[in-house]
Length: 299
Image (cartoon, rainbow, N blue to C red; front, side, top):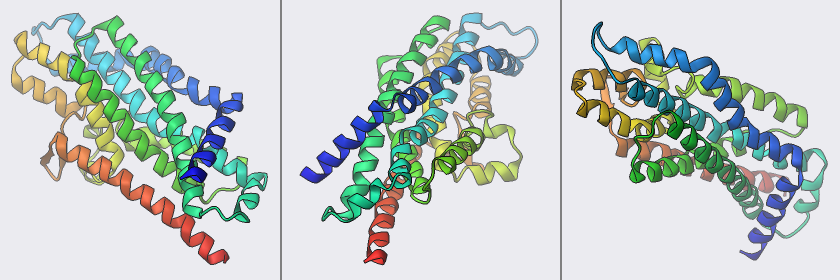
């Protein structure tokens, strides 16, 4: 346990010592917020307005709050994974500069080494993503805040579990990388593709039926849906109380992936947590086992 603490502490200190790595990870969610609000805000607003029939009036503050909830949930869903790849560069750097070889000749268990990288990356990513969540909540408050305290706490829980998942994915992928060029290329691909795969850039309800069925088996899809449900539950409830029919509320939830279906069968919130959390635990176990088997092969 002492070895794990020392290795984790070392990795965290090196991450924050590298100002370029730290600030790159920190400003990514902020840049996304600005870009989303600038270029996607009006598109999201038109999407919400299209749900209501001509002549049906809804308070503009409610529409703006819906847009804010969808924007922030999309940003957080993407950041929890993409920031993890930025925070996890140290593992690849240690391979690139051969520092990992020095650790290999020590009696430290390979499982301890792998967990040290994972926990350090988890700590750094959580710090950045929780800060991003706070910034997003400030943005939501500026356009229309209808979230309860429970919604806010659940939002932080969603971010925590999705970061567990994101760090596990980045650890497994980075396990096979050994140069800075490789991690930069992989990071760029993940940043560009993950938002579409998880339904953050475009709800999977807008995809073809076959693609929807495939994406419904991706754990990241449920992470996006969980964040979206808790970011928008309050404003959708306010809409219902203001006279918007339940059919329209359900239509909005279906459109923005608050409701997820597996072959037309709805998935409840508890099952979403089970899928995302179980996937995170499974991927962590796979990552540790990969490191253990690698050491056995070397021996």
